[in-house]
Length: 370
Image (cartoon, rainbow, N blue to C red; front, side, top):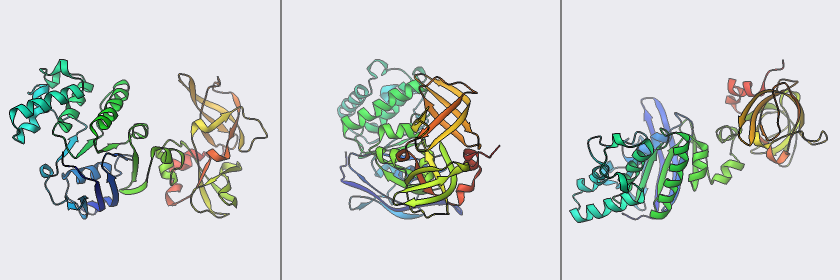
């Protein structure tokens, strides 16, 4: 493994014709870190990974491994392992041969190739399947082969491009644990692309959230979960309630906002002044059902849709002014029920609105008075 202390992306940009897919990505990755590139489809995360792998040339910027510039090197000279979404296994080769393929291409001695291959097979727990072809394996087993092939030559960096997206829910959970276990046990440095915020939160040391090719926020899972930098990040990180409203009073880090006629108090993220538009963000699980009437941020609503999700119910309710509310609760509720809602001001985040806050996405969330 070619050890390094830092991998640095300086102003990495990529354009396709006149379209910017990635704009001035600055990121420093420490050896041993697990970094997740997160965002919706088309945000630039896979473009960033392919630039790092050498599969796409940079339009601007540079990539450094300590003091060595590597963006000018071809992919095979960067020494990175890569796990693809489609597994990309050779269908005519056995599990053992697929894993050993990269070592043979590097012309390692036979005994070293055998030793490393056996160790990789053991790490991904495929000892009973080494002589099978990929077509004889389950999706999870195929992904284990792909991971073993990526780590067998002890790369300085492992790149993973949505490796779990083709698996069912149960296998995704199992493979998440496996990937984190391998990362820790082998001391890997990993860059992982996903559109699944739960996956990123559970795996990564730091998350990089992208939108339209630009970084929106870099931080720990806790930071992004509890304090998204703007309402776009909040939207992607599970704050399903996004309500546009006019700012009333601002008192330090607290402000009142009036979406659809409801006067709500929350924590300010960014800079706000009275009279401007803002976006209020609240997680469904942070809305209490049957809160006391005297509580701040209290609302009455009618339940419209209920989904059973085990110990909890996920529901949509609408206030008498048309505000659509997404909530999660252990209370037994049903469509048509009248319920009282309350939100702790510390759990309600208030962001400056921007031009895109006028989109249908937010208008639908706010709900029109009916």
